[in-house]
Image 1 (cartoon, rainbow, N blue to C red):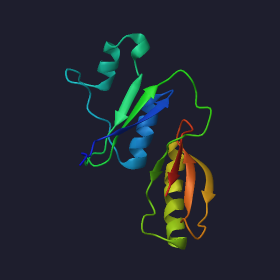
Image 2: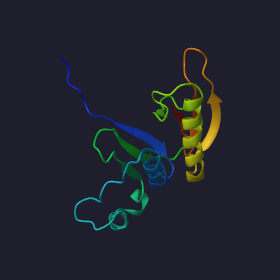
Image 3: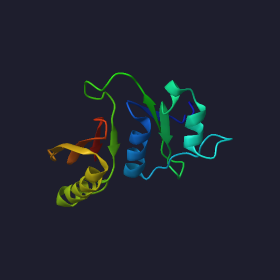
Length: 144
């Protein structure tokens, strides 16, 4: 029998800290404490070579249940649709208008944080409604 392994989800991005802070707000995650020996993340970043400063960030589920999210700076911008995306489960167990109201409320909460609404995928008899969104750097995710 195989063992269950922990995993993290890694995002390529231009501004790792900005994207990490966005996802902290979306998911209720937290930024981890700075590395041992540093009073703050600013102190840690100042200790790094200039080209490495701010090259990565992370956020974690404070309950320890959800996966760690890791954000790494890459030189190229996003040019195509994500092959993997997060589905933020805000409508679990809800159907019809009740589900749609929960999705719309979460969408309204995320827009001022820098998210963008892409489109509503309405219920089709097989799948319930979901809203396709983008984070602060254009990475797609769904409110599901």
